[in-house]
Image (tube, rainbow, N blue to C red; front, side, top):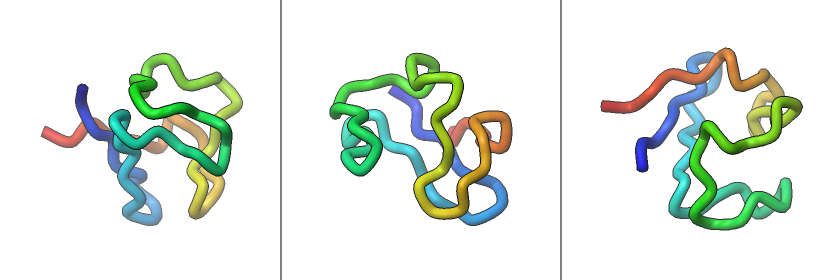
Length: 53
């Protein structure tokens, strides 16, 4: 699964880790995150993330 970078703050969403603070379990692909999910560091939406190659 691909990791995604938050462009404004540099946070990396790693699907293998998920986002425990937002009750997103490990193994959740970025594409499956809820539409209202936001970066846990700076609060921007999913549209501000880019795929990490």
